[in-house]
Image (cartoon, rainbow, N blue to C red; front, side, top):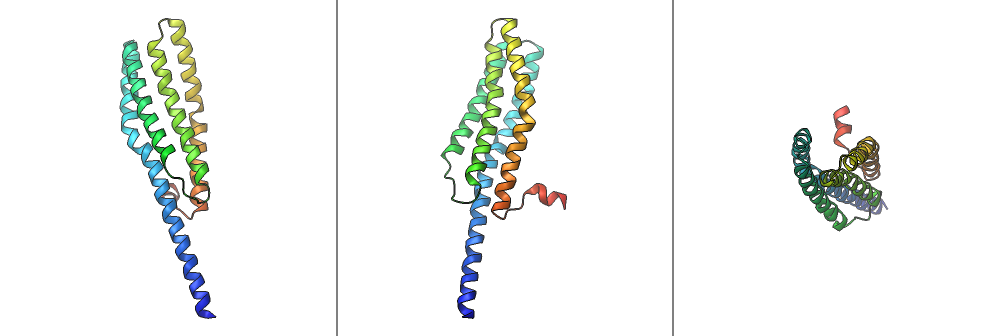
Length: 165
């Protein structure tokens, strides 16, 4: 009887360990898509700021278009990822897809701003950008919340949890 109990416990621990590893790999795969983009985002934002100062509308449009394409590639890659059959995986993936779509919307708006032919049309795009920027914290909080739920449901520790200790 004790042997059966130990075998069941060992199998349960192996399953939990395997599930945690799958969750960790899935988390890292998705988060890595963002990490890879961060240097390009930083550089693009710097360039766009300079282009705004000098009213280089074509350059704003090109920079926005290029960054939107890079983000779309990440979206396509995330969509193509196999979603493991573990708790909160679908929600985590969906939250990150919304986050990437949000980021892409900023850059497509930059692109449209640069292509606008009148000050009135550019002003409309500036208002759209302000709305997008105003939603940034909400979108960021949503993805962090989904990631935390995913981590808790699958026995993962987030780096921010370790940093608090």
